[in-house]
Length: 121
Image 1 (cartoon, rainbow, N blue to C red):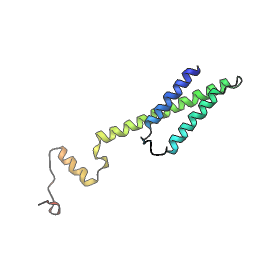
Image 2: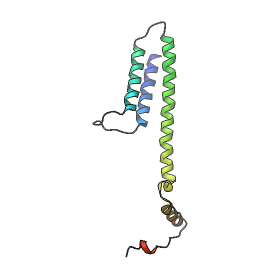
Image 3: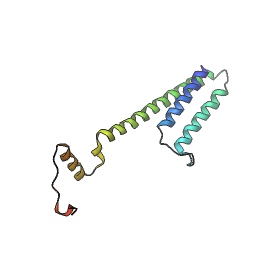
Image 4: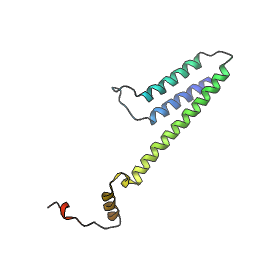
């Protein structure tokens, strides 16, 4: 049981870090990175220092926290994929109104007329 819990904790920890924004080694860790690391270190210390009376309670608590972390990792992954899909299939969402109209006209095979002030001659 303990080995599977440790393996699941490592797997979940890696999944959470994978979904966070990338950072270089030279930059200091963000508060989110630090809090996740501290939470996993505290859980690791608690799982190694077992007492017989509260081991069942600790195991249940650790299992519940691991499930929450897995759900958060899945949610973060889904959000990342959603934003990538929106960017890919709806590229005009970040454009201003004039550029969106121009691209819509081009999509159906039309070119908008060039206004007098916009000529590049």
